[in-house]
Length: 226
Image 1 (tube, rainbow, N blue to C red):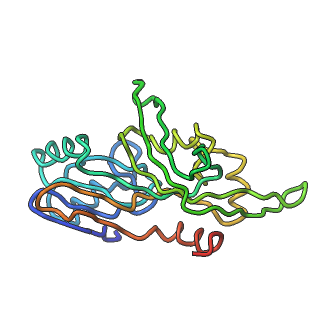
Image 2 (cartoon, rainbow, N blue to C red):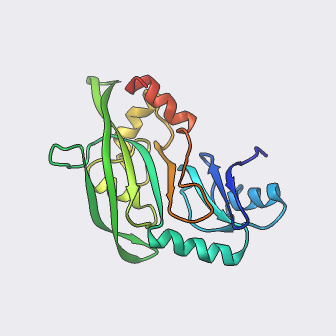
């Protein structure tokens, strides 16, 4: 079992870097999960505060006990903890030419319709040429910085797809046909990662940041020149 990286720890929480492909919560049909593996690693049962999709890498807050989990769930919901992501998308959300804006829509999670808000900034634009039966096809790629205004299930993936800016390699909510072409270019894993927490909470760092996961670093180096 690969050790899960702990970025910060105090008496209430662990802030960890969840790897790609690891489910956050165990259950029926789940072979491996962060809550089980982190509990085994630390020697006590951890409590989830919020979640990331299995194929979304990055920063996750986990509590050491039930009371701390309730406290931190409330803190995150209050806006005192801001979550920032990076994504590579195959379209650009409408920004009126400014390269930044917000997406305000409704999303459906667990059968319930909820309002959702995401702020975005287009960091860089490029394209990748892929061989098809009809010849070379250029697929635009956009590197987006994202900040959650709300925290709904699959919010970023649903909202960006709805804004004609689907995340590359997102076959569940994105553009399956484009993703099939991107696989030829080596972009096979979901291009989304939680990379920064901004916290206004006493006793914790004001900011916790991590580098992009390796599969996204590869995309940026190969196609964006980073």
